Amino acid sequence: MATPSRGVRRAVALAAAPVAVLAAGAMVWQSSTAAFTATTRNAGNSWSTGQVALTDDDAGRAGFSVTNLVPGQTGERCIVVTSNANVPGEVRSYVQNLSTSAQGLADHIRLRVERGTGGTFESCAGFTPAQPSLPAQPLSLLSTAYNSFANGGQEWTTTGTPGESTTYRGSWVFDTTGLTQQQVDALQGAQVSIDLVWELQSADPVTPAP
Image 1 (cartoon, rainbow, N blue to C red):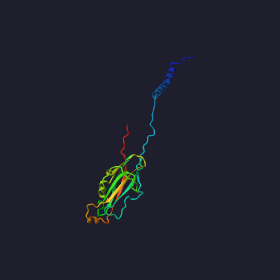
Image 2: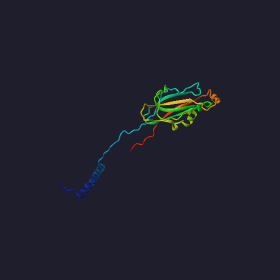
Image 3: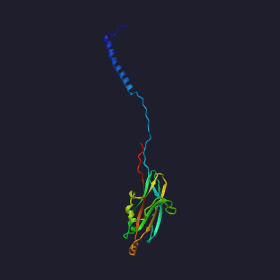
Image 4: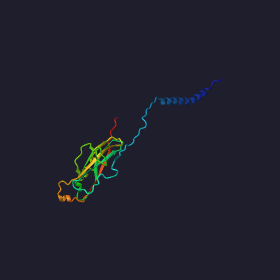
């Protein structure tokens, strides 16, 4: 068998060189991607807002609708306020929308609001105060001192359990103490109206532990 010439052997060697380079490159690439791996996952993260809702048992009726009022007359009405919120919060009571005639009857209707247990809108029988209350104040004063959630009173802390409730009792008196007979007579035909408001706000968020 004839021995290949030197030129043939050189040509074969040069042709094989690119194949060797490609094979070496493949080996390097394979070794650079080989590694041990492991993962862990905390799946299903989501966020949804809570809800606050407040109702009462007045069935759309005004708590006080008194006509033919005379000096010294008094009255009371209870209302059951229910929280249907699913987040903790605080309820405060205040007044708004005072409207009074020129005689100034708002200065002489004194109202006190208490929070407690027992009683319904139909009757305050069984009502028991749960916390101290301020003395009765004129509607004119209440409308400036307690007219928003920020300065509301008779706080009730809710837990975020739908259906929890408390009772508020409003007591009023037509007080003409210190007035002359002429001043009392000037109040005839006078009118005053006001809204009693209970507002629930969710509690400040608590930063979770890390």
